[in-house]
Amino acid sequence: MDEAQLQGEAAPRRARDLELRLYGLNAVRAAFARRPQAIRKLYLSEARIPALQPLLAWCVAHRVGYRVVEDADLDKLAASSHHEGVVADVLREESASLSTWLRDLPAGPQAALWLDGVGNPHNLGAILRAAAHFGVSAVLLPKHSTLALSGAAARVAEGGAEAVPMVRLGRGDNAIAQLHGAGFALAATLVRGGSDLFATALPERVVYVIGAEGEGMDRELAASCDLRLSIPGSGAVESLNVASATAVFLAAWASRQRV
Image (cartoon, rainbow, N blue to C red; front, side, top):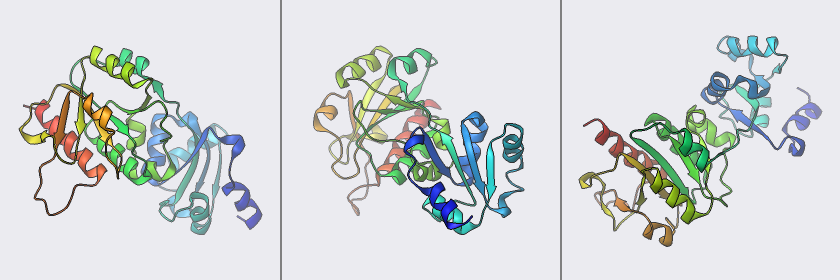
């Protein structure tokens, strides 16, 4: 691609705000597997042609544009060198409402994550990867949260972003009442001061409330939760990274469901 073309492709896309630029092999493959109709344009290196033959055939059959480009072009398109040879523009998926999600939720054990201030895209991606691994039903976003899936988060999630829906909450007290009505208990996740995660009975239907990377959970929200849990450790470090901690909380819940 020449410089003028590349600048056009990499420029801010005000007219396409409903699109997301994905990159990374597993992220693009997962989007293609679940919602191929969302794919709007594809860029790939020559080396990736064999691995992406099904996607390329779909693009040809449905008249979706694709372009074979150099790795340096992909670096600029993705604004990252971690693109693994493929970049795709896809339509963003709208967040469901809490009411809709609860209406369609199957009976039985369920886990969800309420993200109270998590902002780092790499942490979000790692959380989505863990959530997909442990079969989390949804990521719940507060009403005024600006958190949204980015290309970086989707790459780190390694396909998990397509497996875990995002749900937009309404007013906090209403959301808590709706979750309680559906049989969920809310568990505040605290660095310290909570009950020992490994010694506490966990409910079949749980919403883990995960605080921000630096300041942690909102105190008022923590006080409104049914449980307050902490991960015991050696004390050699202050705490786990928020994504690592989330994986531990989810693993503890999943292990109780197998007993």
